[in-house]
Every structure is written in structure tokens, then in C-alpha cells.
Length: 330
Ligand code: ES4
Ligand code: ZN
Image 1: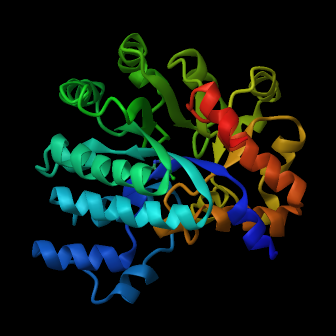
Image 2: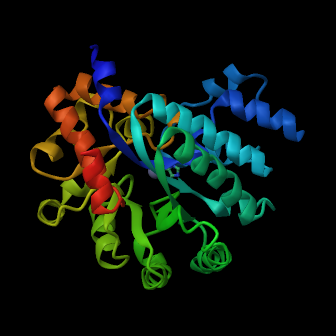
């Protein structure tokens, strides 16, 4: 089989995926029309042509603008179904999906609408395609601690209704200037409530943010974490404690976290024994779904089939699945 076939046939988990980042320009236009929303782009191609980012913030501006077409329960369902069908093609057997309720509640969309549409698609795909999934409710770190607490309280009213899916908490959006310590109390509350914990750290922010995510937020997994290498003692800790890093190579390239793919440190961290995984982050914006990310690693980092299989295996090991379900896939 071709290398793409080989990659697509590896059973794998997607662990770093923002559902709002899967909105393709075609669907943005379709939803805008359905909801009577005017877009500041003349065409699908004009919107796609705007996807040239110089840093995380320049991307986030377009990502929040794109998400503004999501109004109804059906919109969230359609977005999630489109992603899950695409993930199925890439051999995803389990997806841990981040969603940003604040992006929607700030626009007057209820948190129930957000949960309901996403969950309906995930349950349908679990029942019809056998793909399992979990939801990671992520707080926007550019907003206040108080706003995160209010969002958590509102979401907790729905916890029983979505207990089969929502089991983890994440932290995303603008990293620099919004360090982990800002959310220490929110995370302490989430841990007390029994949620699994992850957070973006060490994407644009320094290695110290990764250390603080571990020490102050008590996360068990780090999203991105590619700047951890700048602190060798931290890197050794990640290796010794087998703390997973959910790395997103094409994202790092598009957001200029790395200058070119050959310089990405994923292969080096894997070689050193870190529990690194390959993920797609915001595939509609970064030019590739998960198999494209594996393919880019193969091509630019000279990873062979053995290493690609190891990365796929790592994704299942690093998931929040119970041990018996991991074993079933491994
Ligand atoms: C994100 Cl790449 C990235 N980093 C931080 N927050 C995000 N939200 C969506 N994509
Ligand atoms: Zn991300």
C-alpha cells in the first residue's frame, strides 16, 4: 500500500482537535447563508486565501470570525458530523474533541445548544461507525478567571446529560500573557469535580508555562508542549513521567512556531523517549487532517513506518480511554 494508505489504516486517536477549527470555508458559507449572516469575504476561495497566519493571534481572529456562523443545534451537529466522517477516513478510532463554549455563549448561543448539537453527532458516529469520542470543555485563556468559573457552573448543570462524553477540561486561545497560574483555582475546582485535565502550553509560550501547567494546574497531558525542549530538566521530567504531548506539526508550521517542517522537534522528542502524539489542531485552517500530519512527519522528518506506527500507538496510550478499551485497539 501507499504510505497514505498505511497511515490511514493505523488505528489511532485524535487528541488535539478544536471542533470549531474543523469548519471548512464551504461549510462556513453554507451556514452563513442558512442563518442570514453576511460574511466579509466575497467567496469561499477568498476566505481560504485569507488563511495565511503570522502567529497564533492572527489565526485566532479568523477562527472566532468563522465560528460566528454557528447558531443552531443543527449547525453544531453538521460541523461535528463533517469532522467525524473525515476522521473516519483517516483511521481515527477514538477522538477527544475540544470545544470552546465561551466562543458561542458570548454571542448569545446557549451552552445547551452547543453541547446538544456536538453530542448528537458524536453519539450517532459511536452507534453507526463505532468511533468513540470524549469532549474536552476548553476555557478561553484571554478571558477572565471569573468568566471561566461562570462557564463551568453553567456547564455543570448539563453534566449528567452528557456524562458519556464530557470528561475533561482544556485551556486554549492566546497563550502569551495568559499564564497557567491565571486558571489555577478553576483547575483545582475541575480536579475536585473529577475531570481529566489538559491545557495548551509551550506553543507560543515559554517552557515555564509547561512546567506551571503541570505544577499549578495539575494537568496530566500537555497540548503542543513543543517549547519544552528549551528546558532540558523539564524535558527529562516529561519523559520520566510519560506525560503525553499532543503535537500538531502542520499547525506549528502555519502559525510560524517553526520556520519549516524540517526543523520540527517532534522526531527528536520521540527519539528521546517522550510520549509524543500527532494531531491536527484546526485542520480546516492549517491545511491538513490527521493523516496529512503523519504524512508531513514522514516526509520532512524522515520517519519510517515503524515510527509512524509508534506515534499511532502513543495516541491510544495517551488517550483518556480506560485501560481495557486501549488494549482493545492496541
Ligand atoms: C488553537 Cl493552535 C491553538 N492554540 C491555542 N488555542 C487555540 N484554539 C484553537 N486553536
Ligand atoms: Zn490547539
